[in-house]
Amino acid sequence: MASQRTLGLLFIGIGGALLIVLTTDVGGEIFVGFRGLGFLGAYAATRSYGLLIPGGILTGLGTGLIIESQGGPSGSVVLGLGCGFLAIATIDRLVSSADGVWWWPLIPGAVLVTVGASNLTGIPNLGRYLVPAGLILIGVLLLLRKPGAGGTTETMGRPCGTRRTGRVRCSHPSTARGRGAVRRRRPAARGSA
Image (cartoon, rainbow, N blue to C red; front, side, top):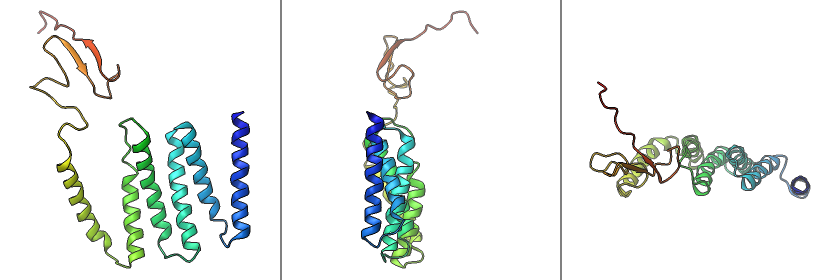
């Protein structure tokens, strides 16, 4: 049943892309965007991060290719590719509950968006102004962030939730026993140097 559904969606996607190519002046660049949308659809069905990456990149690249092929400004491809990387980070952050390395697509995304915006605006050294502005924005966001939001904190010299009763409650997401696991502390060996 699932393979029949997948095959049906594949035929609909290919037929839709061919219909658009035949009835408009959009060329083969639309297939890049449709491949990306296919990967995003597969990501939506499976939540596999390996499908989100090509989905974001190909969708952004395809969008930029279509805009530029329709007489859009030069630099749309680079800007679209950068937006694709930013979409990977945004979608992963919104959908995933894990505190993994969701931020890595922000680096190539920010660079590509800066270069694309520089091409679109005609300001050759736009990055010269955007990098300091971005650093100031990050600093302001860090100052406005609530203390203790994210990460572990120590209270009165004891690590993450240690109680005086000898039990440790740690809500750190990287613990092997999961969030909020309670475990007994082992007493220190007596007589060891």
